[in-house]
Image (tube, rainbow, N blue to C red):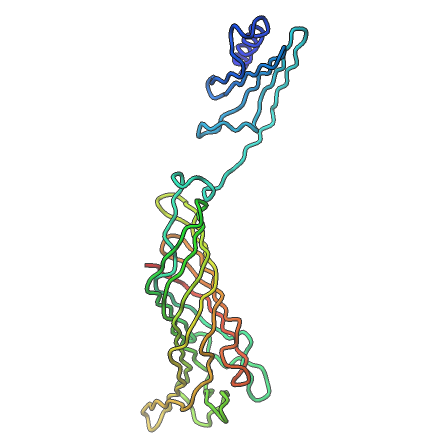
Length: 301
């Protein structure tokens, strides 16, 4: 470092003698990992030195030396502070980063709950067997559109969502006077299940962060539109040592069109998802107030 500044001082003093002889106005040259910028304005010469970053690009906010020389005086300053600007990979030019494919197509499974609970017998309580209430996602394909060179993209696609909600012992769902209610059976039920299926159409915003080894961390979130295709309520009775399945008659009043708020995150082709349905599972005044929430794992194709 002392050698560098000694050479710099020699060049500066020579430039004061006859600047136009040694350097043209506004000269820039490299010395080791430094850039020297010499600017001449009338009878004044300004010499600035900048440190280079690891990629070889000059970071001019990291000035380490400045000298102002005239015929009768000189002023020199050394800047020991270091000010580096970290630029995340997602803001680098496209040829300097890796963007993974969109994350929707795949297969996932998660545990579902109805956080608002169920209204039966005048009380709010959960009628679900949470350990057996599952959601299955089979997403067939996806597509995406890049939003510039910043790593963000819009994702859409198509899939099917299967929901299997198991109720607690001796609880089952039926329709009375065109309204879906929770009833208690006097007989012992082996099982009671509410099943409903949707076609799904996502619109997600996704971003990917390269982490090396050709892998990326991804985050995406957005809205998933859903159209109901089927729903049913079934119970399993034990009669004389044999199990008999009974399907409850009537329309269950499950909302035909709804949507989920979805968040996904993961590494490569494995991730987790969280979804929440802001609208009640059942039509207004046609069944209990119950908003579905699900947390699970997803394997992406």
